[in-house]
Length: 326
Image (cartoon, rainbow, N blue to C red; front, side):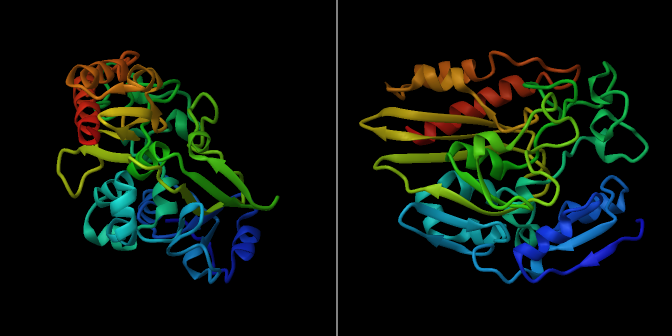
């Protein structure tokens, strides 16, 4: 690991100031940042420890007249175990409890989970100068590549998948991310926070230099609102998921309105299955409708040489998640 300057700001304003220079990187729980630096994949000249911030609002969970506010430094364990999250925002509770082990959830933060870097083997290996690191090509796109965990939707020119299951849940819950930066605070809709490689090749979100997520806001659920999150991993409680789905909607008398279907671990961003949403909107959640939604959600899939299994697997995740709402 290369040498770096270490900064402990007392406030969000100090953190923003410390981060407003090239080579400065924020540190929260360190679950992604520290191993990335050890592997020489994440390079930082200055590390800014956000855990030293004392401002109100960056930690904890509180109910407001609008809904629920979760500080970006709130641990995943706190979110998973919070009774209001469990009862009214089930998709987020189910997503956070799927993250790693209890030890990881005790240290990992919501903001860090949302902003973690890709887990692609080629990106994480310092000996591969891949496209996401400014190199000449995406090695995962090769026919003989180890690409069984890479994208089947929205891929190209880089075929990473977004590793945050909390991100998919928050997109399904129509959340808003609040950001602080050198130009002041701004609010970013969850749908607009994550970006494809075609938009920003070297980034996975819209954060600018010096900006950090301070808190996440979720509107109060309407009467009959339900949500769910499901994922599949090779080893539950340890591995990153290889497929999943977060769903939400208002269900009354068996009819779903305003559905949101967001696929996890199959695209460079939390992937909205808008055609599947339109197919079931305002209709009874029958077995046939749920099956049709699963098919529609993966209609545009383009698997790589070794990840075609993700197509039927993700259809199953969508069906099972929607069945929970029914």
